[in-house]
Structures are given as structure tokens and as C-alpha cells.
Image (cartoon, rainbow, N blue to C red; front, side):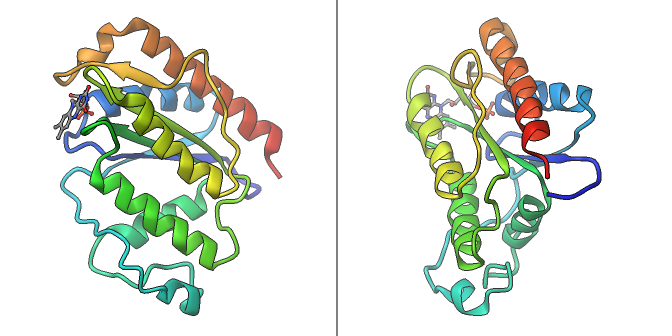
Length: 196
Ligand SMILES: Cc1cc2nc3c(=O)[nH]c(=O)nc-3n(C[C@H](O)[C@H](O)[C@H](O)COP(=O)(O)O)c2cc1C
């Protein structure tokens, strides 16, 4: 946390840029911006990101970085460390999150632990897009990252899930849009309450 304007960074694990998960995240980000909070959306689509190698070098190096270079992992971890709030968004793929967002979560989690808890008391929230089923499992997977990172998680009027298959379909899920807007408002409220 820092004295200047607060910032929330959102990571979209979808293989499709600007599609349903990005749209849902966009509604959350718009509410945060209304509250004067700076936002950034990072779309992992097309980016190279490898899973954790379990090399444990982050525990010996303790330099806030993953030992793997040559992909976007460390860039994303640095953005997480700088931000006051982190949104993780994923479509539901076979009743879980995408490999890209899971790779980021695994590596960021170990780097954070290796360095004394880089994300402690940052505010975090999960957003999931789904065609039909498996979204709760994906939602739980994303929340595991926040909870083991000692982050503070705001709720909304429902779980943060939107329904749609083709890009843009989630716009028809009016309850999901309202849920995202409320999430953005609640995230802004919590960020301001917990700002140092
Ligand atoms: C590999 C893959 C697996 C999927 N698995 C599921 C699933 O288990 N349950 C479901 O309801 N939809 C599933 N879907 C559909 C997506 O969750 C849905 O289209 C979602 O809106 C995609 O989000 P996006 O537009 O941000 O990419 C799957 C799609 C793909 C490409």
C-alpha cells in the first residue's frame, strides 16, 4: 500500500481477449474508476506463461521474483506487488480455471510466501464466466489464492459469475452485470477502509 492513488490490477485468464470474462471484469473496473481508483486490465491471452517448476529458487533468492524468465510471470507478479487490489478473472474450462491463470497463481503464491507475504492485506476478488456448469469450482480455485495470501476478499450480492458462451453473451445476464457492479463498489469500499 502507498500514499498515492490506489490501483487495482485485473488479470484475465481467458484464451479470448475482450470476451465474456473481460466484459465482466470491465464492469468491476468501471465502478472502481468511479471511486477514483486507477485500474489496469492484463489479458493473458496469447502471452507465454509457464507453470511453477517447484525449484524453490524463489525461497533462496528472496528477490520478489520467480526464477523463470522469458515469459510474463515476473511482469505479472510485479504488477500484483505494486497494486492495492487484485482481480483474477477466468472462464470455466472443464469445471475449473484456465492453465494460464493457474500458472500465474501458483508462481505468485510461492514468490509471495518466499518473501514474507507480498500480498498480505491487499484486496482481492474473483470473477468467472461460464456457459453452463463448473463455475463455482473455478470461483473457489481463484479464491484459494487470495485466502492463502492473507488478502481481504469483498463479497457481492451473489457469487461473481456470469453466464454466456459466445463473446458478448454475458451482457444478457443482467443479474451478473449487477453483481459485478456491486462487487466493484464493495471492493472500492474495502480498499478505502483498509488503506494505510
Ligand atoms: C476448453 C474449454 C472448456 C470449457 N469448459 C466449460 C465447462 O466446464 N463448463 C461450462 O459451462 N463452460 C465451459 N466452457 C465454455 C466457457 O466457459 C464459456 O464460453 C465462457 O463464456 C468463456 O469465457 P470467455 O468469453 O472469457 O473466453 C469451456 C470452454 C472452453 C474453450
